[in-house]
Image (tube, rainbow, N blue to C red):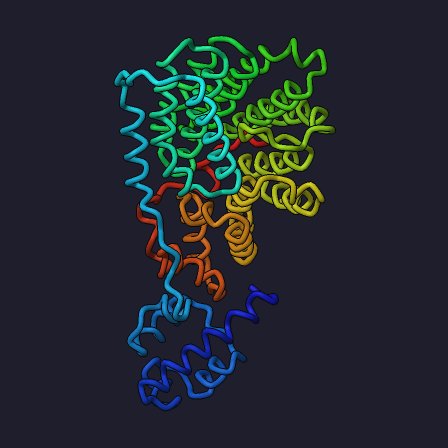
Length: 424
């Protein structure tokens, strides 16, 4: 990988290598002999003229200096702390398992407070702050359940319950627990079916995402299109929220069709959605965005699912060059960049895949550092060949310090497949 980012990072690694070598009283020649390189090679790396960008070489250099590779990559700054995702998911599981009847609490003030908290959690999700969302979910689940027991289950309570369970399901899908996500999505759907078609449509978006994560593409398509039919009366009257949600559901159905290889249906559904996107771009409070740029991003992912990686990359580049790209929520942009690495890698371009992951990490670190698909994608980049220093640094930060490490928990995953996103 070339470019300004590489020029800024590699001299810093060389300087750290020189400082650590000098502290240990080793001349360049002695150090070169220890790592099996020439004195000229050592001199060029220390001056930033030559790159130190292969993890195997970084490991050798770090071993000769008696330090961990992370220290060489990240200097004196320790890697960012990694959230204990497993423990957080266990707390969410425990919250979903509880069915105790709460003490009597005034419903009004509690409901308003919880609605504000749910809105804050959704905002964190849209910004890719998944560890923060994970910490909030157990209390939100418990408190929203309590609110449902304190008075009549009217529309505001139903809206709250659907919002919280949808957020739970989508977060769990991101973190690789699609089966637990299905429980939360089913509860959102069961609550939503008590009335408003808009509420049903939002719950169906999440249910379809979860079903795709479970490799149930046909069921996902059915769930999305069933909700579209229920929205038809409002959409026919030109109601903007109904039109936007219809478009989101159609894109979700298209991605589902692509996931099991039905190219014709995926194309038809995308083309049905595209005209609805002409005037709808801003995200709604429930984490669903729909607009022209999002449709193009979905076209790229559909092509990737169908194995047309040249078209996927072309559509990806067109979409990310649009003005609307920066208006798409950070979580969506970063997730898309992680997903598109599959196409770059299949086209034999690991440098482009690495650049996509670095861009995703700049936009929303929670995507690259907590999402299993991002770890799988990064591991694939490391295995594809010489690794640029900035990609190696990202790998070290999230605990992947060698091409053969870090992916053992995700051996069968394909980058871009763990998180089915509606966000057209």
